[in-house]
Image 1 (tube, one colour):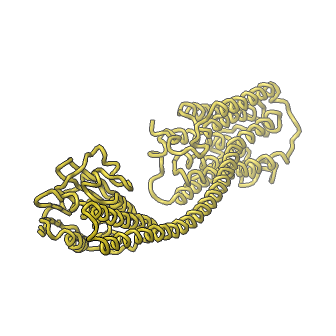
Image 2: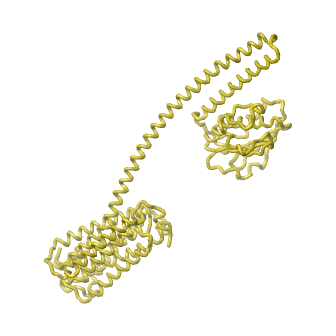
Length: 549
């Protein structure tokens, strides 16, 4: 058995699994119908007065009922695209057409022998074709249902084409059988003698009854049952009662069995329609609730966006105010320290001058910290201005700026082919400046500092032979103010790598690092969200250019 449709979609009665409550309700309907059948069956041959209005009222109601059911099933097919739903919708369209032909051909209703060129056997044979055709459609539905949504889909094309083909097939079947029952009625056994049945009727109606039993068995054995399956089982049970009362246990037209059987048929046709209408009402209610929930969520998002925008404006104003208020006393402290050194330097001993140096150094460190924090805060508000960036040119320019601050050191830069990236040139240079400055700083104790910038597939990297770090603390690398080395060994504010991470994430990429303590570190980053990880291809390492300084 193929994949169950219920596993793929649970929004329709054709896919929702039947629960215990559904089974109890269906069993109750069958039990009540069976009780009524048993009560009426002994009196099925009781003759009643002909009520001619009953036929068109009953048949018209049946046609409308089946047409609406077919339209709803075609609608579900257009979404789920399963052969099972298509053939079942065609079955209901077939019953609507046959009911209409049966009404027009009914003798004495519109014409003494019926319309459409009907003869004395036409109406009865149309009834037999009608009640044999629908069970065959249910058998086909049960067989296609076992294929599931994946393999049972109608391949290719627009669903409208399949629906039109199904409608054409159903109408062709109705027209062909109506033509056979009228023009070819002489080739059919006589099953009516006036308004009464002939002995041949027993064999014909037994075959029709057997087809309904076959459809019931085919549907029941295809598990698990959906809600639609369960109510089709109920329809077939009531359909059996209909055929039994109106064509087996009674004597002919206008007796108790004739009327009761047709009422059963109308009830049977109404069950699936009722379930489909209830389903559509529930789906509409859920859709309305989801729409209202989405509106409330949208309003909430808009409200929170406005609040965040206002908070960002306040934070921006606050950060600039704080930076001004903090820098003012820093400038005063630095100015007084310089004045003391200039005016009283010759009177101060070595310890006093050392303390003044510490004050000035702390002021500069605090000023750098404030500047880094402002830069970090601005990154969240600054809009990206993406453009093609030649990365090798950008890296060399950044290297020249970084090298100028350590001109007396032996630093060997190696640059591999980096290509062009769609990025914000200014922000990306800020990130590269921090990464390269970080590499220069932590290679200070090497005789020859080696810093390599390269690319592996879509992954870029900056590698150095510096101090490295313990990988157990790698999760702290990109946190603000987190340092893995003491401040007296390597200076810094603890904000640089946090800035790098924010720049990379603003571009939709990610950054991570690998290191062996004492042997250097490698920082990897991507600039787009779908780039592969560290296992990217090594195609970018084919050739490299070494620049010494």
